[in-house]
Amino acid sequence: MTAAIKKWKHYATGRYGQVHIVSAGPVNARAIKHPPLICFHPSPTSGDMFRDLQALLATDRIVHCADTPGFGNSDGPTTKPTMADYGGGLADALIDMGFNAKNKIDIFGFHTGSLCAVEAVVQRPDIIRRVALSGVPHYTPEDRAKQREGIAGGYPMFTDPEYVGRMYKRLVLEGKDAGELELRYYRFVNRIKAGPNGWWGPDAVFSMDTGARLPLLNMPVLLLAFNEMMLQPTRDAAKIIPNVKLVEMLDLPMFGFITAPAQVAAELRRFFDVP
Image (cartoon, rainbow, N blue to C red):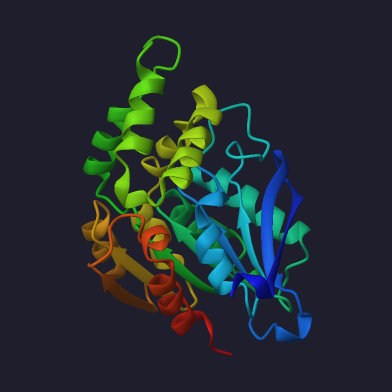
């Protein structure tokens, strides 16, 4: 299947500079049958997490995997941003790529990327057609405050000499539910590459009032719930989104789109492959 697609790297312009994007689509442009899709990743990682899912979906549409500002190869802010800043920065990139009310795009976001998607939709609903979210961090204000307190101060990159080794052990050696060894290694590299400001992404997640933003989604929304820590928050999110479909895939672990990309791609196709 991957022989039928081509991949390329490019940049779009956002409010913080350049947004790095890896895109894929059919070698034969006549094979394109569906609107384009963009994938937003969790933090602190990069759009490379979606490489296998991208290959499966790009046979009849163009699939863009963007690096959130400040992560992967994208330029980032110099002061701590909010989720509105992250989502707005990605929306800027979509506008720069030429998407508009007559040329709309679909979005798939996971964990941090799900809230980036929410903000992009709320800020620019005119350019978004359909939205799929997985692992939505929807918490009460009290739970958000506790989660945020746990990451306050950032990662101990310069104070804990065991930090890098500990992350390598957790993400690479022990991360068996996150794909093959090589992919886990690059996830580790992207975490380290994010640097001392990598915690800004999770901080923005737990600073966002999802209870106020999720009900503003005004187009068809698919929620995919894997068997992971965001299962119940995703179920709770489904209760406040107007036009939503919740699909629970409880046989899949947290990174279900990595361990079972064909299964997840099939579910996304059922949602996105409509006029």
